[in-house]
Image (cartoon, rainbow, N blue to C red; front, side):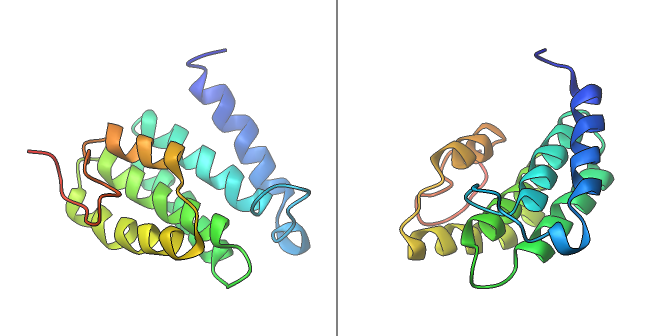
Length: 137
């Protein structure tokens, strides 16, 4: 159901609640932690409905969970989401400090993150990924 944001938010919040504690660092065959992936999608959905404070809180939880050398996907995805929320809110100056390290993290690990980068570009930074992050004029 395209556009069913509140329904998606409800289900994603349930996933976030279900993968707490010992389950927070489980991957179950995914590229990164399920707990971080759920927060990434929840935060993006919340940003799209204008719930920016809640979106930032969930995205920052994802950064905390993703920190550590074993899962760059989780950390880079969470960084991207914090930046995405700030760009959605019209705050490029807040996005740069998390988007630039994310880009370096991915470049150093041989990943590209093209789908995530497209989401960031759609929020007003078409040059993101070209070596520096600057807001489109």
